[in-house]
Image (tube, rainbow, N blue to C red; front, top):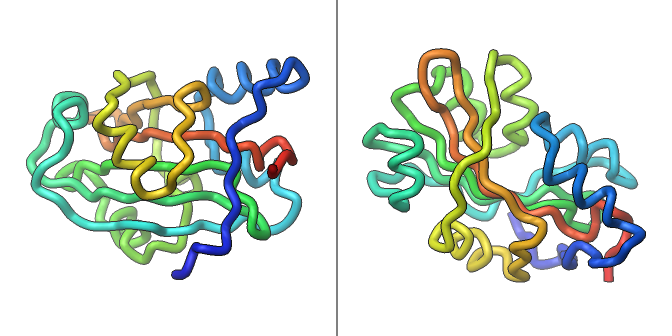
Length: 174
């Protein structure tokens, strides 16, 4: 998928957007649903990278455990405007087979797939190494609108996610 046409902008640092900034960073539900609600048109998934890996950054390995993971770098966009960029690591020995099949097709946002599982989200440690992995793919670092969290199944951790909200979620694109 060619994604060079996409426009991304830093989340606006203005008093007008302060409440939205706090709400986005504090919420613990589906960011996919939030982006779909904010999108001016159809919400689409841009897939930059998806590959199985046997090594992950230390913070990810410590949080998830396991010995094999699926690394995925995506963005959610509408029209040509990026609403958020995402990096996820999925622990392969805990993921249900149907979930992994859907992920590997590379067309569904993770939030839509998680709706079918009983999961809990919790804050995870940030890591400059993880942040660099996302921003080296997408550009435009913005630590102030980024967060890391774990997605847990009742029996084990499933995913480590690092995400960055972009200006497009506010309707501001430049």
